[in-house]
Image (cartoon, rainbow, N blue to C red):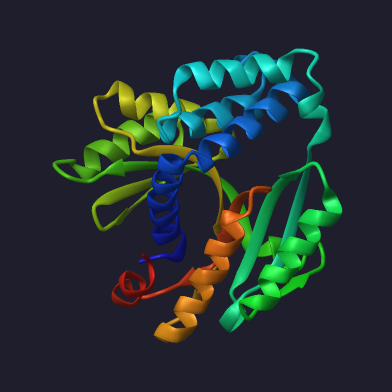
Length: 251
């Protein structure tokens, strides 16, 4: 089982829990506002906005919230101007590569927070480019596997532009080039399949095995701390934790 397959499943489960607390919706809104501000409010002509909206829909963000965020970003709103995108790279326990994507209105605050979290949980913040080469930007669509014929799903997804499919427990991970994400999702849903999530992700080219439960717990505590920060939009890592260990450390 590949690390990225497990990771996308974990992210979606954690995201669903965050949504119940309202934190995830705030982050999703911020991403939509900034995308609309930078590229306009028409998702057909703004791929970043289209992908931000797709992700918001994946986590059941209400349409009214999405529309308000688009309007806020595409209008003369100072809020969007205040945010900038910053990417942090570093290493967690066991040499796990970690990439943190943030939208912040205070670069110094966010950098200090991220550096502190790496240090506190057995990692260290690196320079730009330290680990980015270990990841590819991909579109990832998650489809529940219950009652699904993998070959049929593969054919449908391929027609939409997907180039790979992998099963992870009770879900399929369908991957594609970033600009094919929306088309792949539409093809899958159009064929009657259920889509749990659809978003752009950084997928690791190789993974680092973390088999010790204590080290795995340390890795996940770092990930949790980073994702819990209000400025952090997404966290990606290249760990590969065995299923039984992962179940023991993910709560």
